[in-house]
Length: 144
Image (tube, rainbow, N blue to C red; front, side, top):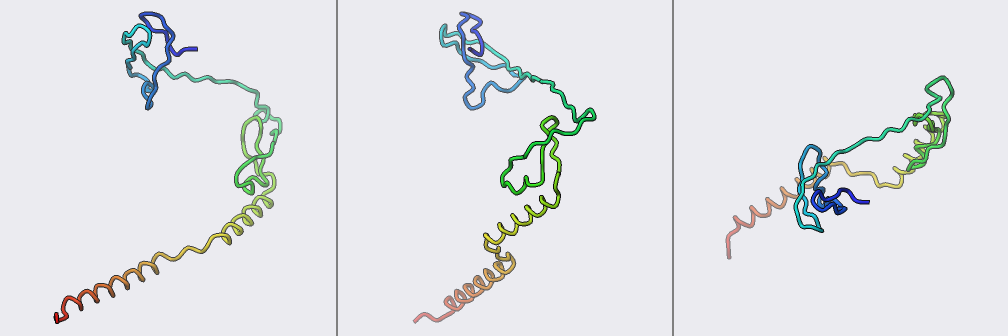
């Protein structure tokens, strides 16, 4: 299957989209036919396709719930998703909250506590002040 036919020789051609060229709507693009060598113009149109499906849960029936698969998996515990409307529903808040709390506790234990930025800045300033003081002394010292 080809993108277009050359308007001169009717050869089937693929549109050259190198570096994103030719995707913007309402713009005219040029391309040379690989068969006849003539340059032709083309425009790009984007179409949308919609498909309708029944959503019984939106018409009085209960949701049809399925498990949610998520990473990390703990964030899906106690949650389900309706296969008809895609709504995520909390089915067990206690289990969900417990899984999240356990995950966060485990994750925080595995990471070293971050150093406080103000303390690091204070230490850097002390080091800089000491270095500047040493430079000042060396420049005022008599040369032997």
